[in-house]
Structure formats: structure tokens, C-alpha cells
Length: 89
Image 1 (cartoon, rainbow, N blue to C red):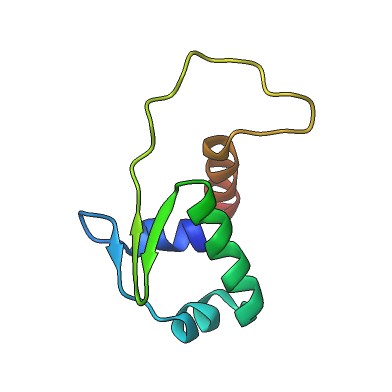
Image 2 (cartoon, one colour; image 1 turned 180 degrees about the vertical axis):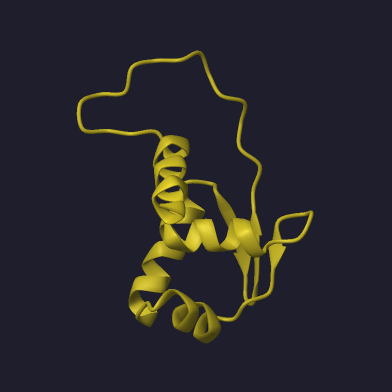
């Protein structure tokens, strides 16, 4: 989630950002393996596209009709909202 939030914040109007792996790892205080894993998870979830060194945050599909999340599961939007609220406290 940290990588996704960072890319959303630094991307231009098209969602593009040009941070290299070393810069991202330093800014996010992340090991290279963790960064690789986070990137592959975001790509697999169709949240970002990546062609070294360019990342693009992809548009989200319109939200489907509300449904109750299963126990212990949160929607990504809710998680990001909580993270932003915690950062402002």
C-alpha cells in the first residue's frame, strides 16, 4: 500500500512517475525484494503499469453496488482513507 500511495501522490496528470527502484526503496524505507514484491502485487491487481523506470497508476473501475466486506477484509479505498486520517492525527 505504501508504494501505491506514494505513486498516486507523485504521479503527473496521466498517473506517470519516473522514480527508479533505488529512489523508491530509499524514500519508502523498503528493501529491494519488498519493493519488487509490492510492485508485482500492484501490477497483478491492475493498479499500476510498469516499464522500467516508468510507473503509471491506472484508473480504477467505477465502484460496483455497495456490498458488505467479508469479516476481516477492507476495501482498498477504506484502507487508504484510514491511512490518510491517521497521517493527519
